[in-house]
Length: 219
Image (cartoon, rainbow, N blue to C red; front, top):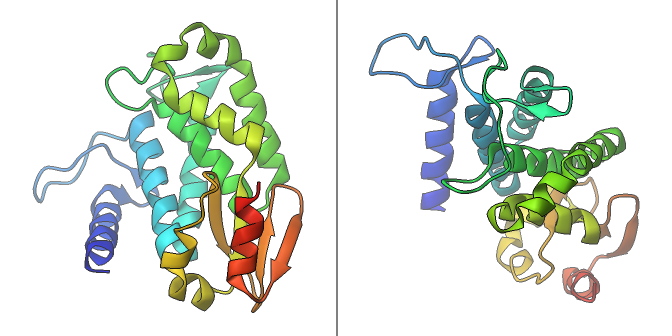
């Protein structure tokens, strides 16, 4: 709990200092006003942190901002089936994870999570299309693109979204963490039951979390 509090405080501090008047900045030096606007990787990794913050706290403000920033990326760093590091579109971005995780791969994973957490079928489909556009490039350089391959695998097997009320999710965190299925998300639903859902429907529900976990781990 202490580590989580520290992490959330750090995230909130970052937003306070670098996300100013709906503009994200790349860095800030001491008390000086930030000047350099964010690049692709800044938006992407912040969005990933926001999604993780939501999955730990279930505070909708984090998921809402992750969605807003991710849509901004789609609108400003993508053109003609090509991704760019900068809004001016002078420098192409790539799927390679050679030095650190590819911004494109993390972004598409973020979009996939946002789509399933919001049950947004239109976003889900558009995200699948965007990665299919790059399929051959990814397969031609398969040893250098583990994060892109992770998304291919997620799409093939599909996410499972475990839903129940916020109190149930928070009090059963440790038990939920024992679920073996690798592509699991958790989301708030106004119900005492626990629902196991895929991208299209909820396939199992019960008041007993252990029974729902058993159904998920059979997948």
